[in-house]
Length: 633
Picture (tube, rainbow, N blue to C red):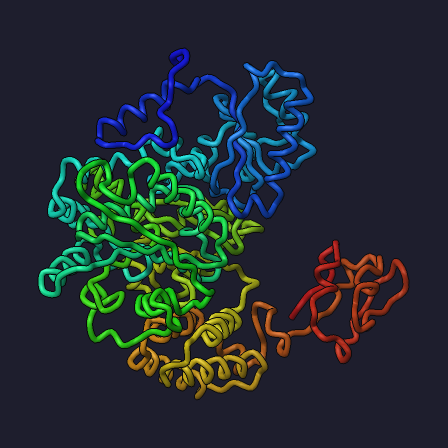
């Protein structure tokens, strides 16, 4: 039970030692009743878009209207993303642990009456396992969560990201205090080296080796040196870094301060996409609170170490995720990449030694320091230690954010955690690594998800995007999508990228319109080689990966476009035909009413037909038909 009248240190009380931090953590924990009812509402970007703020307000209004004694009034906590995005808005009632999904404001009154007052679950809001049909009561019993290993995400969904006391109560800044008060910078670097942590931004470069290289550069060139967070997450379908910044900003900040201590940096930067306003807001709040508590700024924890950081907003250019483009953007110039004659650890920001890591990498640092390299290195596989956070999207039942140990088979993520493909069939391919990655076919479903294994099959880890595709996805169309994306996002500074991407995309346009040839495949491979060898930065050199992997694993689909003038997936408009199955058509006329070209005819309650000459292949008829009578061939 909590102590009566425990006084928590004021917001302006500065922490001057590790003991002060421990005392504050103890005071916060003892001031809280672990048995008090608490309604936790997900306020990640996805749930906010689905109306979670209205849910919070409705629950608050229902509580006030229920006439509950103020002393017994449940608390309402808003947190970052819980990860189960396809089921939001999410509400968890603690300490019971009842997990409610797809909650609307209309459900608030029933939650208050039945759960908060009568302590009974609202059955219709509970999660039902689609495979077994079993209703599941709590979050930890749901396979989507129970099969994960959440260490980087361990606080997200539990703490209020705008309250530093919540972070401190759950162990926040303990690693920083340990590093500053009982470890030398050299010991910190050695611990990171020993952990085997590799950068989670895409390249997978050993983090400890990067820090060591920075120290060697500083010995030659002297200070200043800088530490930078790369929060310019731009891969389509990726939202790992955004979620971490929104849901546990103190973990990112703590990792950055530890890294600054390790190399002796006095200034740091957090480069965050301007399209992430909630992440920026929460980081700003976290930094201000950390300064008030003496965890950021001058003489941190009275150790003599001083460090501060600022946020730089990215303007939405995908290429600014590349290190040199990011640096030039922070320096106030156009975010264009430059040749990497010298690594950024030697000449980064303003030509000075700079350590750049992505958001997830920095969030791993406190875990490595607090729990130790030996603990960390036992998670995952030898050359890919720890866990990896993925955004699982596409044609999968459980869309959301997942964290798994490195080396887990791909199929386990898709089938067990993700709940399999919508419709119950096998997945066709999985795109990992975004526009820079490759498409992995179902035949390689047992591929271990780690840096080296993904590279061997032609893909890459990337920052953690994982797009699941089914039989209705066309690999030619997927390739066109990524090339168009990169074509628009390229800075155009180098010829291989500026001209090569356009030419490759036009070749794929020919395949999708039925004018492609086998020679075009040879040209694609030749152009891919030119981009890999000659592009200025990774945007161009990795652009061919989706094309090369689909050519390798789905060559027959390309040949079908070229030789048979057919799109097996039924996607490429010029190569498909819509028709109506007379045996299934009921003559309801829904499709005829919706057709923008009025090319569907037939008597009421009798099979209809499509005039293929007038059909523009928009697909509205197929979307409208409830009887699956419209077919594409």
